[in-house]
Length: 420
Image (tube, rainbow, N blue to C red; front, side, top):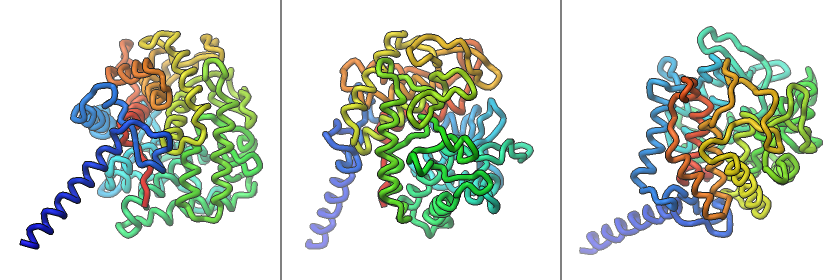
């Protein structure tokens, strides 16, 4: 009888704990970040959709991007895989590291390990001034690198992916994730300008660089500013640079204040460290890279909430601007004042403004920050959107698809800090 009572107590304890874990992803937000509260809002649930439908929506998006006929994830042999920007016929550290983040968040260890092994084998420099860094682009058919250079956001994501994997799966299941993260970080701190290669973070300005090479070390990209990731490095990297990473998080938040227009909330793709547009390559404007900024700000708000007032004001301004352009019709490139730019940046070989799914997705993520009730309109718009060809036949399952999955995960409370 005592054994039966004990067994019942254990079942109740486990079941109750599971229910509590489920509630953490469905309760409304508290006044503090999820790192402290454990609460991740399920905004789709608050908008009236069911748990079953939400789970199915995320699963369908994953299936479309990773397994379906228009997938961007391709397995190689028994142990490797890559994510490809199919419209540009390459694999790049951006998409590879995004694929790893999706995999670790959704507990898909085999997918994570495959992408990491492929990235390490074919893109990570094993010697020379770039040792530990990654070539940012390669043709996966010919295995010829399109560039030996590094795009700083790839390393930023790789490090965070690996720290999360270490926390989730440990380091004794085939890959020492922590050691791999530390290898990149330790290599980063050894870069002192020799061969014109630097730390991916400009140590004087405490801001991420556009690339850690040559003059590109002296300016930045607003969409690379992920203060939440630096907070996690300070917690989990344990490499002796904890205070520097916390300073970088605060500096990234202050930078975003300056980079985002005070009326529209729009930011240029490329910026000086001051936040002013960097116009070296093209007319400064809100374009493809910029789409990620509202999603990144939402992540920092949900996870740490250290810049609450400004972030809430930003989300309101940004969504109000897009609403003024038509919530179902707003285009995907703007001058910072909200006007249409003279120069339209092509997507692959296609040069056209459209109502792009990627921006529909990330603008909906901002609803996690915007307290206005009508902000749910953006959530409904994303729910009704489809990852499918546009009316003119253009289709981007890579960038649109990855931002779509990221935003679905954020809005359903499935994009979380993975603690040890």
